[in-house]
Each structure stands twice: as C-alpha cells, then as structure tokens.
Length: 257
Image 1 (cartoon, helix red, strand yellow):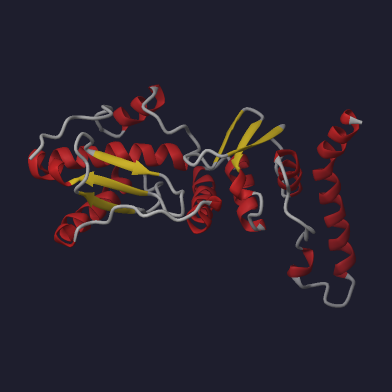
Image 2: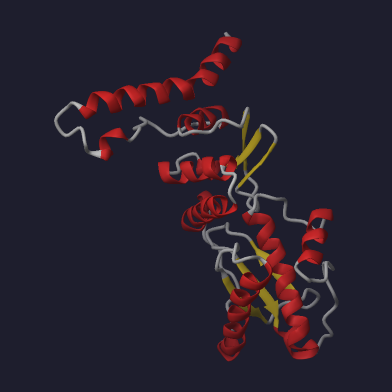
C-alpha cells in the first residue's frame, strides 16, 4: 500500500495538468469558455502535510523536487537543495498565487523571476506571520526618528549598490536597548514583519562609516533569509559579506554609557 500511495503522489501532478488541458479544450467550445477564471484549479481543502503540499505544487508545475518537508523554522520560510524542499507549515493554506511563487522560486532559471517569487513568498509571510501570535518589538524613540530615516535611505542605496536591488524593502529602526550588539536582523515571524535594528550607542560612538558597515552586515542576513539560506555566520555568510564589502564579524562590544 505504501508504494502504491507514493506512485499516486508522484503521478498526481501530470494527471492534474492533463485534466486541466482537457478542461481548457472543453471550455473553449462551451458558453463562457473564454473566461480564464474557469481554468483555475480549485481544491476542496488545503494540504495537511508535506507530501500533500508536494502534490499541490506539482500540479502547479513543480518538477525538480522529490520530497517536501514541513518546518517550524521562523527564520527560513522556503528552502531547497537538490531534490529536497523545506517549507514552513504556515504555507499549507497559502492561496494559489503564493504556491505558484514557491514553484517559481524553485524552478526559475532567471534571477529576476526568482527574485519576484521570493518577494511574493516573503510578503505572504509578513502578512500572515505564518500562524504566529503578535509580539511587541521595541520601537524607535521619537528623538531617533531622523537617524532611522537616514538608515532607511542608506538601506535603499546599499541594496541598489551592493545587492543589485534584490533585497526587499524592510523597516530599519534605532535601538536604545542593545548593549553588546551593533545591529540585529529579525526575520518575519511572531506576528511581525522582518526588520533591522541598529544600536543607538553604536551610532553615537563609532561614526556613520562603521554604522553603514553594520547595516550591510545585517543586510547579508536579510539576503540569507530571502534566498532560502540558513541564518548564521557560516562560510557562505562570510563569503557574501566580503563580496558586498562588509566585515563578517558577528558582534563587537559597545562601550556602556
């Protein structure tokens, strides 16, 4: 029985695509057959696990993936390596356009297409916060609003200069709580969108050149998450940091005061 079920799952994508083609031919000669909405695949319920999600994605054009595993990792929403796909469980009930974005993220050979898909995946994550409950994050103090605006402008400029404009626009705020960290990237989750925080003490003590370097460091973390990589300071992080001109250090003590 187990082998038979696997066989059905493997064949489900081609079978559904074949049915869709037949429906298209039928509707072409039926009243209202020119309505594209009639060609949309309608599923009775969302998938319940990784294998069912894989069947759904194959029906939408996924071909390179052999296995799909659900995760609860709040840092990485979608990632794949070889024939293995990992998707956060919060995407089980995602609408068809988001599932198509996951397919495009895996299948696309052109960077612009993959970047578009990545933005759609991240946008859904920020909107739904993948099933998490809202939490309170520190807000920029009103007296630091001008610093936050400058950081936001630098994020846009550095994104264009060093990342080819591939990163999403996210909030960059000033933190008065950070004592040992210069900055921090927080991925979307716990009911909040992704953001970067920069230490106010770091800004006051080390100057804007160092602050921009810290900002690029955190943007490399943003790049990790938005491209489906682990959020860490491993070899790939250090390689990317050197590529975009950022120091790969993880922390540096901020003098108290």
